[in-house]
Image (cartoon, rainbow, N blue to C red; front, top):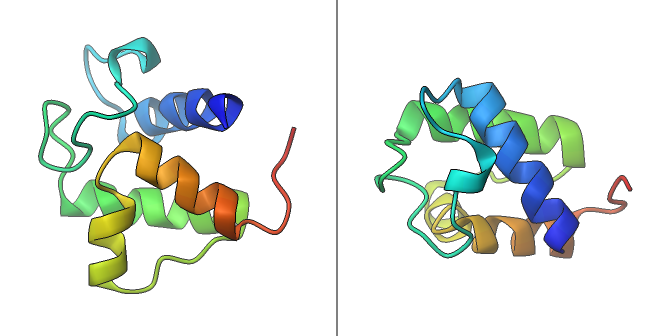
Length: 88
């Protein structure tokens, strides 16, 4: 799962175009949405699209999204549990 977490850090910085943030700045257990990174609901929508496209995993309601996007760790765990096949 560590590889998936590192991959997600890079993708989050890239797709959200976070200024002054590097993948190393994203902590696995830190609050993802509304936390220090400044990720908001529009950013979450972009991440949902990326997750569906890259991993084939749907996050299709707000309650599920709130749980999944709590931290990077919860996001990675959800993807690992629901992806049919993770790229190496």
